Image 1 (cartoon, helix red, strand yellow):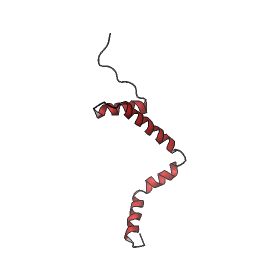
Image 2 (tube, rainbow, N blue to C red; image 1 turned 180 degrees about the horizontal axis):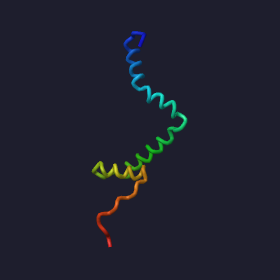
Image 3 (cartoon, rainbow, N blue to C red; image 1 turned 45 degrees about the vertical axis):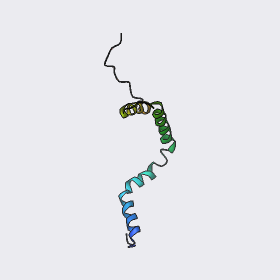
Image 4 (spheres, rainbow, N blue to C red; image 1 turned 90 degrees about the vertical axis):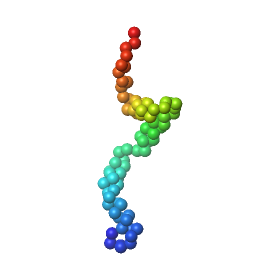
Amino acid sequence: MRSRIEPMETLAKMLRGHRELILNWFRLRKKFNNGIVEGLNLKLNLTVKKSYGFRPFETLQIASFHQLGDLPEPAFTHEFY
């Protein structure tokens, strides 16, 4: 900020605005690795490929919730005898 150079002032303002997120990255750097995120991304992409052909977005959303979160199946509204 003291340099009075416009690009440097813009960079300093941006870094100040994102200070907490930048510091959070350094705090959590050793606790999580990129493999976790890549694994979730792979599972999501496989779910998208499996649900190819379903038209509504809600169907893909429900399928991804079940795949990534292991959510219970919804109760049926009809009973089958």
